[in-house]
Image (cartoon, rainbow, N blue to C red; front, side, top):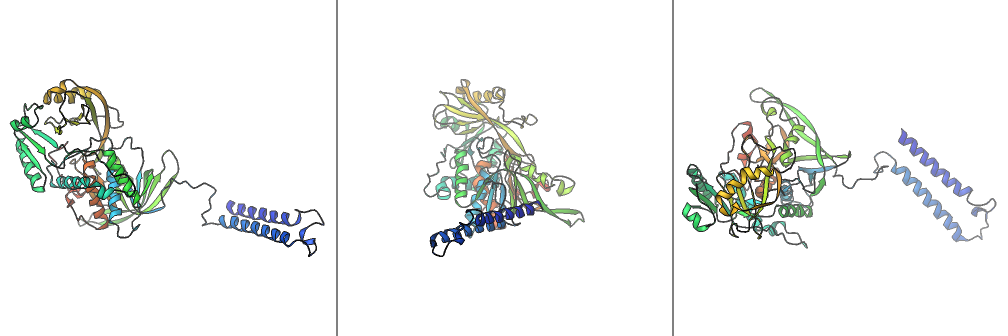
Length: 505
């Protein structure tokens, strides 16, 4: 009602303005229409032109104030996401942008699929992607992980064929193909041999080394306690995570994907009650829209969508909780078993350390290290033991952890590391799958239009190119067409059948 009163007042003001123009703009007896017909034609034309301009302005002001118009007393915020999208990807890390790229790559008509990527921090200051060690390996025990790595390595070796953008600089991942070197004790040697057989069958180039062969190839290493080593010959090493993330993002945006800085804080969804084969009642949910909150603001935008992709990494479980999944019994009570786990990465300087041929070494103690650049620098770390997980509410670094858990194994394996200096350190989050430490790719049985790409537990960066393609296939084709990743579906969690990986780093 107040809006209509304002409209009426605007119209009255406009009419008054016009009356004032006609009657009061000239002294009495000198109005233009009282002049003789011999008066200037140009003057009459100017008057009527000015009159028509004011009438047009009044009509536009009245029209703009009508309900349903685009008029608003507030300035539009250009940072708001669109009101509608076909697919909303929650999480703008490397996995999320890989999915966005593959969705646009697979669309049959240009702009046929409207993809929105929502990321709460475009500085990526706490993103798992850019805080990782940047490694890629094929030395897994599960065929699914091996195939993901092989496909991703092939993608990265030919990255400019995929992610090159016209009139932009080519992508340089700084891919160092020095391989991974796993060390095993006598007790675990048979597991390494079984893994080697699986890796070779899957197409990975891996070599087993005896202690003597190990010393011959890497004379700087102490083979004490080592019964067998496994060395990756191709498609293994490390690269720059930030470059890969930005390459996916740049390419996806150039193809029409939309980027939004915000946080998904709620969903609107419908429910439908069904009966299972056992006679139990269950509620199926279908997401209608997501609520995107702008950073540092109370302003938000509802975005209607057909599909939501949960690629939120360490925060992904929170999204399912917003949908009421993870409470109650049976499937409804099965939570997404993903949580943030903090991992430390230490940069050390050792001028007399291993040379340029240093691979990414994984000691049987769990401690790892690799070369970082060309100036005698290395990065190192290890995962904490069960029950000793650090506080994941922050990214503070525990330097005593290096002294107690990392350095002793480093110095034992490489005598030159007895003399080193920690120059810097950082901490990052794993999207840790507490169920079996492997990725969850697929749909939830109770949320019909949410797809998962999370829970990678430390190998999301290296698997992002192939995992993104697989999720895009699942969405647009209805099934996995390139790699069979059905074993990584959410159903294994409901069935309590873990996909356990024996080469966890």
